[in-house]
Structures are given as C-alpha cells and as structure tokens.
Image (cartoon, rainbow, N blue to C red; front, side, top):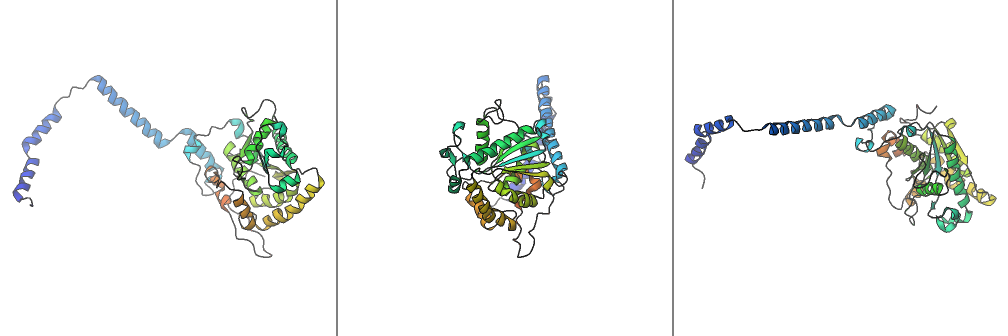
Length: 353
C-alpha cells in the first residue's frame, strides 16, 4: 500500500521537531571530560598524518635528484619519461661507479656450465652449437674473457660488461653470467675477488640475442650501473667480425669511430679462422648491411631461435632515453638506395667527441 499524505507528514514533523533539535544542541554544548593525555595523543596523530602527506607530495629527495639527473641527460629533450621513482630509489650507486666513462664489452658466444675452472677447456662443460664443436673454440672464448679482464684492470675508469642472454634451451644460465663466473673462478681480477666477493667494475648484460644487441644492450646496462653514458666503447670478439661491428653496428648506433675500438681474437688454428671469415661474410656482414638493426628476415629469425625462454629485456624502463632506438626497425632499402639510420635524439650525441 502506498504511504498516505498523513504518514509522510508525520515523518516530516518528527524530523523537524524543535524538542529533538534542542536536545541535540544541548548534548553538543555539554562540556566533555577530556584529559590532557587525550589531547596530546590527538595532536600526535594529526602531526603524523601531516608529515606522511607532505612526504607523499614531495617525494624522497634521492628519487627527485635522480629524476632531475635523467632529465638533464637528455630524457626530457627526447620526449620520454624517466624511469619510475619506485625503481630509482632502490639503486644506491657508489661515487666511483658513477664516474666511469669507458665501456668494455665481451660478446658471449656460448655457456660455461662447469664447476671446476681448471677443466674449462673440457667440451662437456660447455653448451655449444654443433659448428662451435667442430671449430674447437673453447680456448678462444677464454681468451676473450681474459682480455676483457685485462683491459678493465688497466683502466680504472672502465666498466666491463659480459653480454649474452639465455640463448640455449638446454641451459638455465645465460652466456653473460657464465662468462663472469668463469672470470672470477679463474681469478682473472686478482686473488682478492671471487664469486663471493666480485670485482666491482664487472657486470653481466643478460638479454642480448645477437652482436648488435651485445653493443646496444651493454650501453643500456652501463647506464643502469653508472647512471650515465659511456664516452668510449671497446668490444672484444672474433677478428672475423671486426667489419660488422666497426662499419655496421657503430653506424647504426651513430657512435663515432674514433671512440669505438675493436679487439679481435681468433682461433690459433688456421682452418677454423678461415672458415669463420667465410661464414661471417655470408651470414653476418651481408645480412646486417641491409638490415642494420637486425629486426627483419633471417636476422629476426635468429633472435627468435635464441630466445627459447621468451625473455623480455628491461631497458625500456631503465633507459627510456633510448626507447626510440630500441624500437627502431626501418623498412628494408630497395636496390641502390642507402640504408636508413636512426635520426632521433641519442643521449651520447653530445657526450662522445
């Protein structure tokens, strides 16, 4: 049944009854028995609330300083955002690391899964491709690692980066971490340093799937470790790949040739070196000469095969200043036309001479 007018009126009357209103007014005006302790506790709660809100509004000073440094380094000019403050506040860089300028890259080619460094040349301790077994490259891999450690010890302004991802379906380890572990286990940095007390200027870059990414991702890893960008780069790999790195990868990165050094170390056995030069021309230099960024055709297919665990690199987050370069994949050039080089802002444009 619908409510009658009288019922509605009665309810209205109760709400506006002057007696009820007077009763509530009297209660509100009655003096409360509040002790000094209660007043003090209330004041403390208000003060804590105010401080928490101010902290939230203005943020941690360290995080804000890091954001300003990133914006000044080129992030704002390139139109990209800085890394999240929630991540930046977890990184506390030593001043000595922040002053590093020289990036030394050792490109990974295989995975060492051994436990005894004295047996590092035993084939069963390595995860290898069939062709690598034929060429007997284990000694050369270790020479690459040794050279990287040697150069890092010579230059106190350098950061050594072993680069290589989790490229083999039969191993849970990455190329880079296995190289770094072998370097420590063989005391290449001196007896003071080992896997429990690692050399502070050596690290791993664990996402690269090919030679171009070895360099590009190592630059991003340098940025993660130091907060800055390298002024010069030294790459250590096979001598057969020199032209690929110096003429093509440096060009794709727009890195000055005067600040890009390549150290090539090949197998001592002549046949293996000759075969490597022949294969490099067909499967390395030639494909990259028309696909500088390795993002199409057979070079893209190689990346897919070398990513069996579906890994995603973190450099869009940690190095947003180069996100355009990380994503750059131009249309393949037609016959008799020049390849397209990334022309967006790069943070090392005004750093490297």
